[in-house]
Length: 186
Image (tube, rainbow, N blue to C red; front, side, top):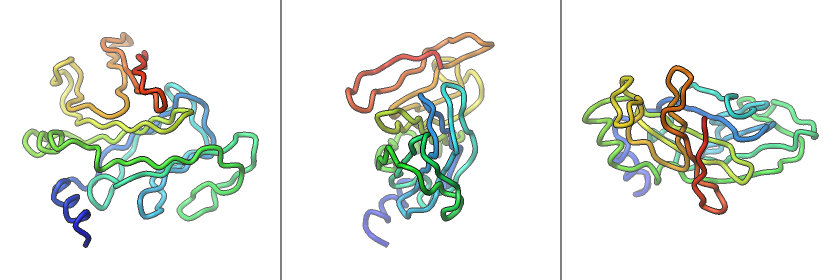
């Protein structure tokens, strides 16, 4: 095992995976997300904003992937799910981005999970200019400082806190090119 892998193993000790949440800010087609080994981490024939999202679980060698490669296709081109593990093949790939994940997760979040529990959430939001990565710990409703259930939220975006249909805290994301912080109601 490399020195980098040994360090990741120590950093993420006790974390074997978590909840995966994927959404998109625009209509995306033929979406593939691969981990550092080239294994399919997630795929979707199509996603629509803002509420067309996926919530599921994942497992990873060190608790989270080292990095993810995200690609999507031109919706006018023909593609099909016949690659390894159902990855989409064919068609015109119009975006291909590789983004670090494990190196961005703060130690404070991991220590908070070990000390006080909670479910780790890895979040991916597809933006036309590149994918956004976020994370948090999910605990009981009303336990976070803002009244939500999400602790140690960080990364490139955070969802709005909506309770009984009312936005109590706006969401936000950091534009992948300009770095501008943009508020959302979702």
